[in-house]
Image (cartoon, rainbow, N blue to C red):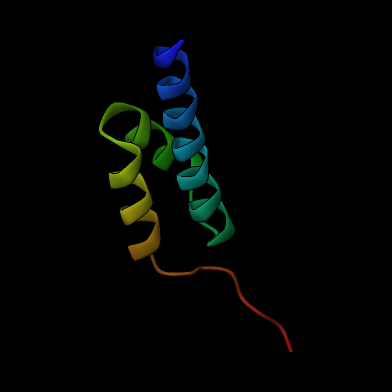
Length: 58
């Protein structure tokens, strides 16, 4: 049961990294793969450091 919870938290963090990158106009899929292979924390850090490519029109 504990392993299931750990896996669920790991996947939720990977998806959070994906959403961060996707909201910045970056490839969420690439960040998702990095998160799955390395660590979700590394994926989140990379996603936070990426430049925002979406344009805000006023």
